[in-house]
Image 1 (cartoon, rainbow, N blue to C red):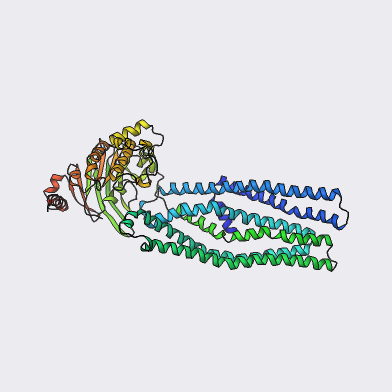
Image 2: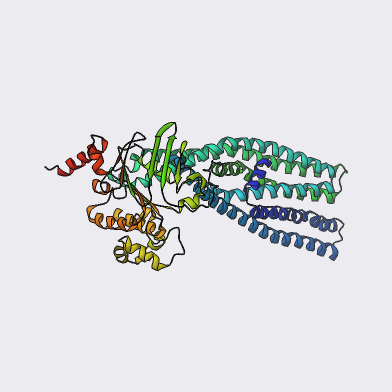
Length: 577
């Protein structure tokens, strides 16, 4: 338990950690105020037993009780505020830290499984840490501190009852140890179930069009339903396995309170304890373990705190790419690959590729699906690091650049555009939040999307759904191009940018791309012949190697992959019923 608390405080940022420490210190003060109830009761009872209740007894007891209650209330308020600020502050800090850390992980880390895990940690885990775990930490620490002070107060009145109280606390923690071990077993099972459930829900939502098209709803969506049922079973099992131990823990406290009352009466009847002390000890038996009982009930969740910290820390400890380079301004925008190899999960994707792309030229990359085209572009822009060889940008190895100074030279237009749940204007100025509206409109006009934006109910202030769900594919592509125009980077990477566009949008999209790529270095992955044939250099990638390269005319003179590619496209266009 104490190792978990230590790990939690180390996990928090210094300013939040100080808030927790202040809250614990206030908990000590709160425990003193709580323990003051005992002398207040003792003072009043002494007057009652002597049959001589004076104003000194009444006012003294009332004064001590008022100090105890009011001090307890004020301290509790401030303590709760501090732990709340610390908890939600820690949650916000770690979410931001995780987001910043993810920016510099190799793209190979991100897949369907890892996205579900990250989502679960950033949502469920961090929310639990902020809303539940911090209260667990505070209730446990303050419960232990309050019990310690009350036991000290009991020892002051009668050392025998004090020793029984200490023995009771020790017995309580022995039972609590079994509870902690049960939590240690159950917490990872629940976390794995939560992560799996989030992953399946995300998968279901991302594929909702297919789900509806094939009527995979209700009992037919088996994997999602199984994940929901499994999570329900895990949560229920955990509760049932905790209940017996929590009952044993609580009954231990009740029996100890009963034992202290019995012993107090027994010692009084044997003339070894005065009546005043006996009565005070009976009353104290009800106060003694109340804070510890609260601490014990929350301690069942202490393993969840440990698990939450461990999961967040596991993401933060994932090895980043080496991004501590220099802020370099390239002398030109030439791109050179020298004997580049790259493997992913023991599968070689790029095999000894050497290539030069002069600045302000257009390079088209074509080839069979899975041949390594997209990976090659990702290596050039350093989404991944090469295993061997090197990539030069402006004559300098990309690894020598800081990530930010390298990325400002690249703009991307992907086949699958992602837009954020925000206004159209903010999606266009993404990365430049302070850009004036005039620049946004200028970029939109160049990207041929101003007219359709103005036709929307709120124009540029129209909020679009997450992923751009409320827009057509061509509209999303043009907003993506407007975003790239705003960035005005010298190198443009187009990854199948026109692959899924309908004929009605194609003309405007091509015009938008022409505007984006003026006087730029262009690298395009494309399957459409008319977007490839005018390139300055065409690279044919097959099985991770450059199989052919040259202009359209040069490659058509050889019987290779490119010529076959062109002929198959021409045959498809000329095919009629």
